Length: 543
Image (tube, rainbow, N blue to C red; front, side, top):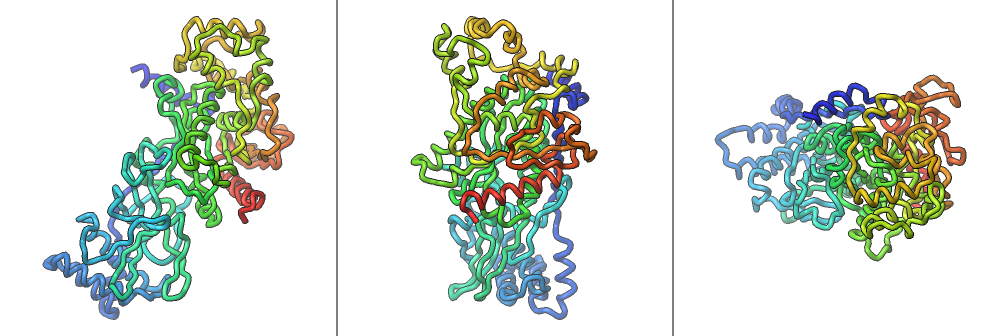
């Protein structure tokens, strides 16, 4: 009952809690292709392939007879030019063939299947295969598709699938991968191949290079439909104690050693789904698709940013130990962090030096000399002793309150701050010793509730302490800031964070966009991310 009360009340006053995460609310509906049927009917009297397809609708036919008719139609349309009626018939025949073969999980020996490889998927290893054209999507600004050879599919692998063995961390909803089905013919007959579309942009057909058909939005929508389908997560704010176990990096696609990771870090009250508009728009760029892979950091947003940053460091180390234990892959030393709002503060701590530069701002007692338990000391040292990450080369700060926000001082925000439940990582004695070591005039900052909402107060000494920490000279950083379309910078605000708080004097670039606090969802803001990612390829020797 308490959780329901907090959810309803917090939703009503979300602006006071420094969030602007819009509900993604993607609607997904599988529907038969009416267009395909009309194409067949319109060409049946003049086109032999269309007539063959029409025959497959005869319910008296056996499965083998249907497959034979479809193979004939595919053979007669295998050299059709992209965009022609014959190519449409080829796509219809391919989709129908896949539908038949899927009924016995592609065990039919009449059609050869290309096995799994770096560039291909074995459909026998997929948890579910869905034709992209059968998925209707609402809630995305645009649907990212590419016209080309073959038929676009969504290959979904459930969490725990044997195919995901060796992957650092799939989301609870599994992985959803864009694939393209294509039937080709050689001396041994038809061969059905499912290409991994993010790894394969084009192939050679009849001696000519052809782009593969694709739908990059359908896998995103399908994955969202399997989970919460919301970018707002109120319970992880208030019940950070019980949600702490879910903290970690997530993949939505398989790890690719040839691509640079982009790590997205969401803000207060949000979830990784908040990056859906950005990922969807970025996937329109073939260069981005072929050179980058997207990872997402999920964390309960009631935690102080020190805790969340410490966990992100641990997760980056864990990923590296799984996929590149010997540290030989240069792509993993070119990571780009993209942080929105409080996620920007966490990202900032990834590229700054802690230790003495940090704790001396609050206490004269080194953490090592505190008379606390070994477990508490270990947790404390993880939080305060850190070096700039050597694997991060660039950071994009979006709507980041580097000096806090006055909205965090709102009485309602203060009220909710007292309701946030944090994990207990030390005994009451240990906490008392640690708090008593803090200088008197700063001690109240570390007395409960020492959580993220209190942390975000304007001109908070905790935030100013981060700005005083040395930033790595190896890291290039950028700012994307909203002005609500008023054009009044430097007197502007995104409605939550004023310009004076989000501005960083030494940023390589600063882009003002006509948005509110959700510059991460704004088309201009996303276009700036794309520009910076393109620039990063040039600067890291990946032209």
